[in-house]
Length: 207
Image (cartoon, rainbow, N blue to C red; front, top):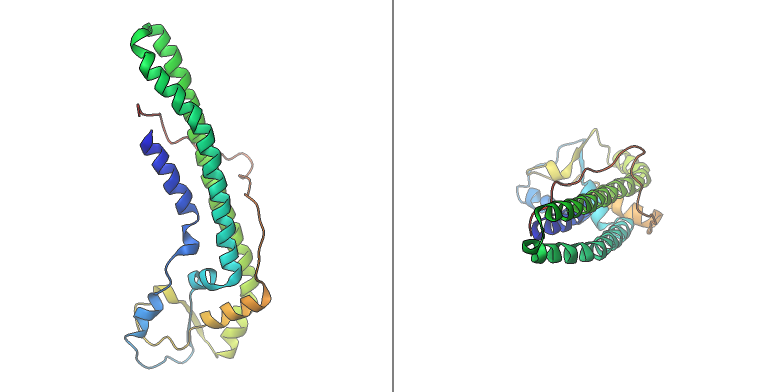
């Protein structure tokens, strides 16, 4: 059960981890240098989300939602842990029928808890996706304007570039434009799509 609790925490962290990805790949690319390629431009979506004020606001809100989910699950897990410990302590005194009945009931409660944990994790992932989509929509016109002003003919993902001249990097322009356009964003935990539910992670272990 300690393992399942750790997996839950990891999954909640993973659900908000994209916004905190390091954005240092451009520095490694700069070290190689070289001639700028006319018409070839780059943009880092990760850096836009991580460095813009609205992206940072979204990350803060996602962290709040993940913390609330962890606290909710922890409060529901505590009495379940107590009942499991009591069952394990009293198991030798119980008849086989009693052990099967009580153990089966605890198993069902654990599976329900794991299913709820999975649903919350999926809702956080969905919430992050929707928030990033909203920010992306706000940034799209800025990307187009920067693309035009730099006379770009091709736009590449900066984070996939291994090395070279990065002088035609649109990221800074887009971040500045986004900061001037929008600095805050508000949202709550997204519901799961109708008819969908995250499956339980499996049967509970002894501990």
